[in-house]
Image (cartoon, rainbow, N blue to C red; front, side, top):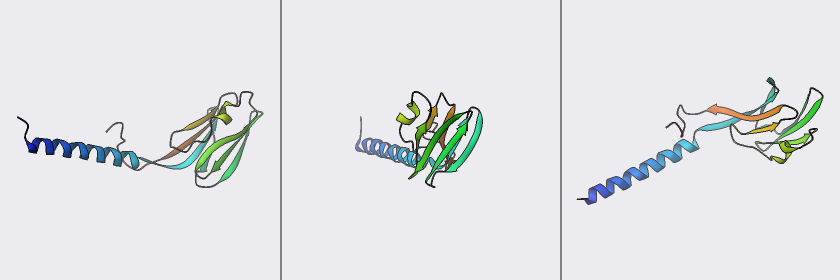
Length: 121
């Protein structure tokens, strides 16, 4: 037979689980910098909080990325398909913009604030 205490305990556990899940999701990662690679080589790292345009000239190709208000966007590319420009802005850690024809990869990276993440927890 289910008693009032069992119902109260079940509701309390559900609230506790939802609170912990929300807290872990909010404090997991904080963005810090933008990493730009051309091919397998690191081209440079840039502070995500500093608004700037970065021109990447490598292997006869040119790409321009824009860091504005802690968001990153490819604003110019001499590739034919322009998919990297159409991709739009990124702002979360581990999001990337890739220009395959020019071999340019732009990724937002950050530092972990906790030792567990919400997926492995």
